[in-house]
Image (tube, rainbow, N blue to C red; front, side, top):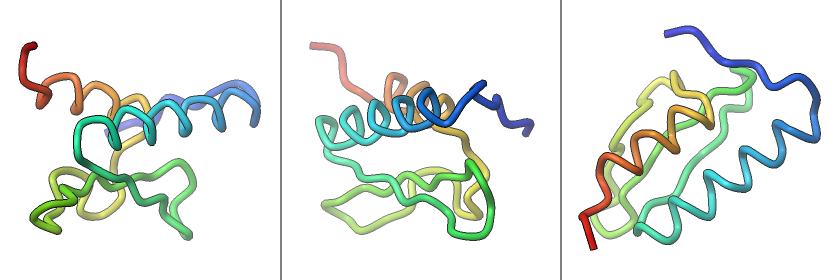
Length: 74
């Protein structure tokens, strides 16, 4: 799965913050890879279970899309 690379570090940080906030609001957290630039893992906080990106294969944009799909309709 190709990564969508933000054009500068300010945009990357903004996307990461947005993904972290969305994850926290939905009961998840994200982990950022230390060896794979731009790679994230989505974790269900209640069950301590990896939901997506077991090998840090998702970008921040991917995490936002996954959370939108998992979020129950209000």
